[in-house]
Image 1 (tube, helix red, strand yellow):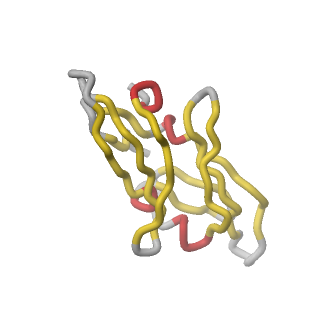
Image 2 (tube, rainbow, N blue to C red):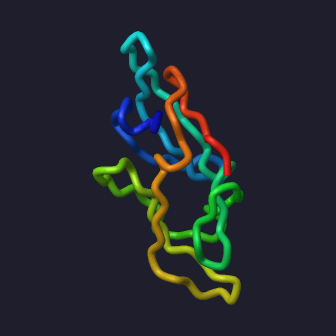
Length: 110
């Protein structure tokens, strides 16, 4: 199940040069647990575009933020291109590849 349907209080934090997604995730008993997932372990930058299955997007991104949408939180950042420019603000729907596994955030694969 996509995490956003059973979670609350979405936010970003930054730890050791990486972007971390945090929220409170409900388990099968209805209890909420504070959970984190390091987005840089699952998201990269390919010439100015986000890519699932990559790594370390934070190194080449600026103005990193979350936007709340009807389909869950959207990661937004201005991503650097290979030539050193940028493509402007790019977006990535976190619910496309992150799910709630009984109160734990889990990346579902590339």
